[in-house]
Amino acid sequence: MGINETMMFKVDNEKENEAKEILVSVHQALKEKGYNPINQMVGYILSGDPTYITNYKNARSIVRRLERDELLEEVLKFYLENHNNEPE
Image (tube, rainbow, N blue to C red; front, side):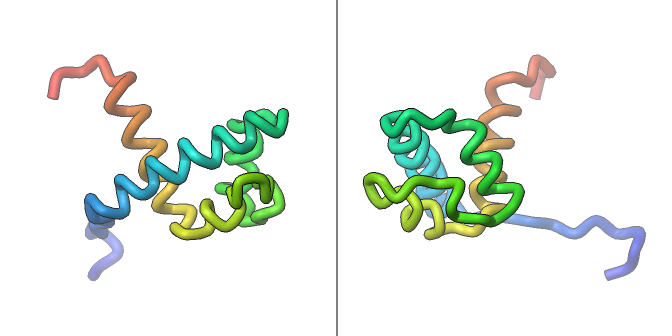
């Protein structure tokens, strides 16, 4: 593939559903422990350091089931689908 070509990236639907479940589960665990879930999850996604995620309700192990890029893809997809005012 040449430098002027665009590479395609695709995550299958099963991983997409799993990412959604993981994000919701980890968010809830962080919230229950009194953390700011968004800040903690951003810290994890950007750094890869799992200590941003609590062990409560096994959230740290759960979040590591998927790669960070798969979690980020789900976040971007949700945001753009719900905040894009342009017609499809």
